[in-house]
Image 1: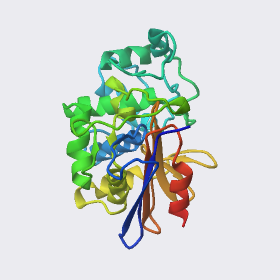
Image 2: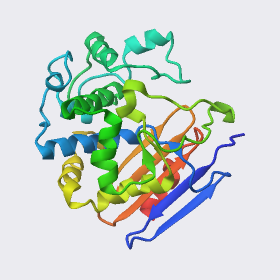
Image 3: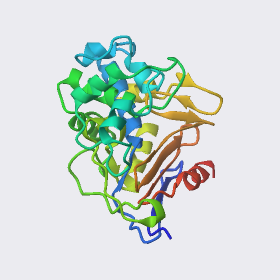
Image 4: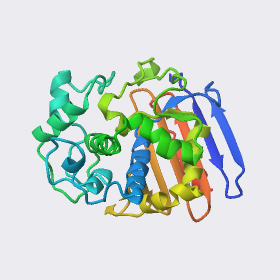
Length: 292
């Protein structure tokens, strides 16, 4: 039995929006968006490039003091830096990789230290990494002289008109549900905020997608830069933070007790967002709406 529900929000090419709620979850429920955050971190990088603050081939250690040299910001955004999903040092600190709240109380100095202890895999091949996304977001925040969460609101969410997604402040997420439908704690992301801190409603997540379809003038260049396939394989390509496949750009997310999906098709102008406060993925239903 899974007590969690789902909300699906769809924007048609003509701009009309429909929202469907299931399983007792209200339409305005705030849910952990998890790794959808990585797409926003990618936009943050693209915006910093357009502003002239960084370059895609900027070394990480030029932005984040003490970081291991040789890794570029673009490699972090496209998951091609050869980094693991999480560093072994984090696993060891937790004893095991706990799903209860695995990133709680992590710090930026720990990120940098863990990177130095991590053996890189083959660079140039996409290998999904929460560590890499966290390092990227914290590097951009350090270069801007800001905190990551404040920077996301100032440069991405507010200019795109996304009112119901929060990196900090705003309402708490509804109760997440883990395995067998049991209530589990929400995650606190610590220094891993750029990899998964966002929470929001289905309408708010949809506004992120439609904002990328029709960006304001100040972010149009950043959106174009982010939505360029730079790495990947036969089925999935990596832009800056965003994933591309079969004519759509998207990202999904999952925490211990929540799931989310955001995607859009530039050619049709159709966009979709789905959130669930359980481990039951809404991805298939969301993609079906994009393809309809």
